Length: 126
Image (cartoon, rainbow, N blue to C red; front, side, top):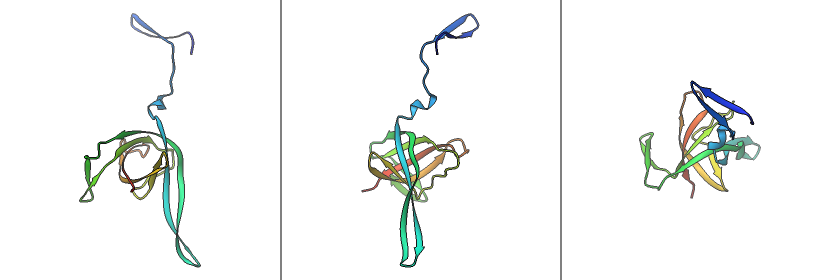
């Protein structure tokens, strides 16, 4: 973006570099959903990836932080901030995969009540 100037009153700023506003999301995660399928051999679990390479930012915690949710205290490993693709709903029963490590979702907080910007509390599955 060459030769672009922002002018406010008597001040002007020359724009020299443009970055995508989503650049604050510095890592990619997959969201996996497990379902049960009723077949001729009985009920079998089925795992499917509902979102691949979702941009996000993870704030790692020291492991001493906990959240009280559903009358239970959960120790957290991190808080994942993300913008969810349109039409996707992330549930507490889904799993997060980051760098090959599985995390369970402890809590999903909808930041703007629109279902797009979420803060997801995660805990490593051991």
